[in-house]
Length: 180
Image (tube, rainbow, N blue to C red; front, side, top):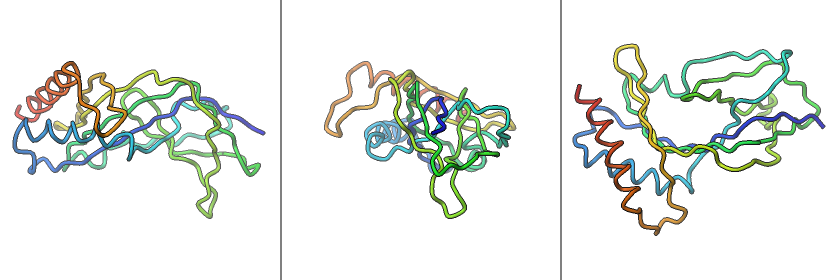
């Protein structure tokens, strides 16, 4: 059994056409909805995996770069530490695609030619980073706005006053950046 160690990204993102965003209040509702949908709809990706030098990494753009000309990307994520992945099917991984997301290297889950995954997550440690974020493009620069906030565990959980203030702060920052 061959095991690779790294981290795991859990993420939910929403793409909003810039022309459809009309107010800071509308932005607030979208960001708040993302928090509530996070536990139900998130995707997972291996990040910062420790492959040996025999694996060629093909770095692509930032994870959401292809969308940023027409959209603002809003989302929420957390990172688990101590993730371990087993290489299954006695497959040798020679090449992988990787993208950047904030300060993390994100890997598409490698698959065999028939689409079956080659890596299986064996387990993770605790969450070490949890944030709500926005990505937008100004000229050639990708702007990242993020704040630490915990997503509600249940759909009927109420946000605390602190969480509401953090959401208002991030939405004000995002809308201010869009208005420049």
